[in-house]
Amino acid sequence: MTQSANNPILELRDVVKSFGSKHILQGLNLSVSRGESLVIIGGSGTGKSVSLKCALGLLKHDAGEIVFDGKPVKDQKSVEDVRERTGMLFQGGALFDSLKIWENVAFTKINTGKVSRKIAKQEAIETLAKVRLGASVADQYPSELSGGMQKRVALARAIIDKPEMIFFDEPTTGLDPITADAVNDLIVEQVKALGAAAVTITHDMASVRKIADTVAMLYEGKIIWCGPVDRLDDSGNEYIDQFVHGRAQGPIQPAM
Amino acid sequence: MSSTVFNPFAAIGRAFLGATSEIGRLAIFAGRTLWACITPTIYLREVLRQCAQIGFYSLPVVGLTAVFIGAALALNIYTGGSRFNAEQFVPNIVVLGITRELGPAFAGLMLAGRVGAGIAAEIGAMRVTEQIDALHTLSAKPERFLFAPRVIAATLTLPLLVLIADIIGVMGGWLVSVGALDFNGTIYLRNTMEFVTFNDVITGLIKAAVFGAIIAIMGCYQGNNSKGGAGGVGRAATLAVVSGAVLILASNYVLTSIFVQVGL
Ligand SMILES: Nc1ncnc2c1ncn2[C@@H]1O[C@H](COP(=O)(O)OP(=O)(O)O)[C@@H](O)[C@H]1O
Ligand SMILES: [Mg+2]
Image (cartoon, each protein chain N blue to C red):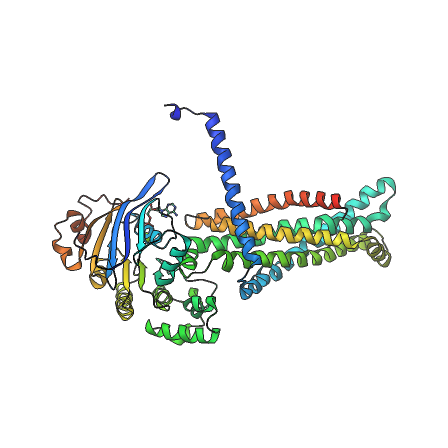
């Protein structure tokens, strides 16, 4: 593992998570530095989403340690600290169906009641502009938007509070290649603008090459390879080679 | 060793442990939700939206149920009463039956279907599309933002619905009595008003408030627990209706016996 671990913002140490007899994470180690963009690759159902959810305290890990900004995440207070300083873009967008687009984007602003609804709406519209959405969508509902637009709204919601770290769970899955590329561009642009660390889950090698500084591959509950993105093609790791080239033959059994 | 052989004691033990832990989980969930109902922050906007959703749009269902129940009740009492020449008690027994028992119980059961299933499906869909996880990551508590507004709205609006159901139910009895049983309409109403007491009505409304809370809590609980896509959401809705209805009938008995004890 050749990852530079100076001043990591997030560390997962030997994290274990099972659902009943399904052992999903079996000693997962990950480290994300400030401002670094880490991409996690791996087959479907290997526990990529589960590891992000453990880091956010949405799932309780069975063993191991999660350290955020140098402090172990143990109690409710530390979990809340992580959530406040981290943005998350969920796999399906997870926009609130019953709320308008601007209310989705400005959800935390409205909720904490620190600003008036009028100012919150203004900030939402400004943030929507950053993801190239016009003010006209602000008063629409999520179901009225296309998949790509919903992902952009979800991105706007994830960045509005200027987080120090952002998680992207399969941000381009289900989008056509052109829209996917546009969403990737937005992600890179906005993460850079914030100077935030990013952890992205994806199956899509084009996204990996566009987004990643560092790539980690999850297989059978562990990170089996981790390295800079430019080492992807000469990693000397047969699992990585199989995944990068999308071959059914190799050490990884297709999930069927 | 013996794990491959069917062991009835182990099976019973497992079922018992499963049921106890389910009750425990439900109790913790209900406690948290009710706490969120009575402590700040209350999301008033959501409460109002749910009042419209739960209360206003349930009016047709509750009204139709009440009119038919009142009418059938009047016919039954007339037939039964005629066996000992007590037909004239139709208005009294109709209003007593409707306000104390049938109004709240039937409204509760109907809304366990309409509202309980609706809440479970909505929250369940939010669960499986990760919207509830999203709430957590945005530092909002689902019990405050989702569950409490529904429970508050159901607890407040169900008594109002039952009050309307009481009136419509009595009107149903009146219609049949005047239309088919040769009662005098004015005298029927006067008998009703002279007989019915404040306690008859208020006990029914207290029941309604409790049923409202039960319906909303079971809907939220089952929805929140749903997993595994659309099928899981469907199962959650079914469970919400069944468990809500059973709890309504059980608590109906408990509340009635308490009212009898304290002389309400
Ligand atoms: N809440 C849960 N309860 C039970 N099993 C779960 C839960 N969440 C995820 N799983 C299981 O864990 C495995 C990994 O899931 P996930 O992390 O979502 O996969 P992916 O790597 O595709 O994101 C899957 O087999 C999934 O069925
Ligand atoms: Mg996933």
